[in-house]
Image (cartoon, rainbow, N blue to C red):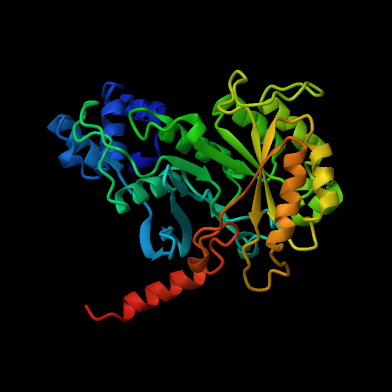
Length: 386
């Protein structure tokens, strides 16, 4: 069976070349062709010998998700619905800003965690994505955006600015429930011979699988975001059911370990200090604002007490509605009041700007209608005359 080279990191590629009787340094060359120049045709990989190219055509492929539809929002957010075979589809979203371009990518088809306020969780879980399908979203978006390659040659000369400066594992699925494939894909993102992103510019968002947070710290520490959404176990058990297995006490202890921060240690002010191993000196706590559920001033004070031992910042997220969600977005005035309590306590608290809402590309909206749109897209294609 042919190996999909798109999903192999540097070590995986080196091992592959050794297996077919080649030198492991070919891995570096191939990474550049695949990810910097986005080349999928082995015949065009001109610094590989003709013999090797023929061998690659016999034993390897370069396959990436196929485009079903592309949507562009009024605010220039772009969303791609991508087929990963077997009637399954995923979504990736690009958010352009003045100082950065952020790509939000998926790690699973659907999600098994069933967070109460998330459309993806309502879809159910189909399967994990392979490393090739995860990195393929970045590969596809890079090409779709018409990005000039990092280098127009295989040297480091003639570099160009890249529209995708940040990647967030915040799309469909729980990344840490697909640990090995996600970590392999992130290694490719970080590799200087591939995308060359810094660990600070790759963020993984988790609902709180504690053992996997500890593994991530050891194997691929990137910026960590935690979907908190409640200041107490009683409420979080309802909103984020994984909390019943890994309650807040265990989750926050894992966050301290990720930063190598001891319980009760004073939280440094400012951003000048740095923990060994962690790419950032804080964990981002994501907190979706649900009207009358978790948005009171009293709950803001509970949140301060809960997280006092964890260096953190808060990202308050306006709820993005979807059919039959059962929740409403907190009024702007209530969000400001909640934010002010956190700021007055010395915390950093920002309110996420909602992007791509008109194309169902905002936080929590991904893939609510993916399967229906996949079937409709294929039906239209079948009905189109040749």
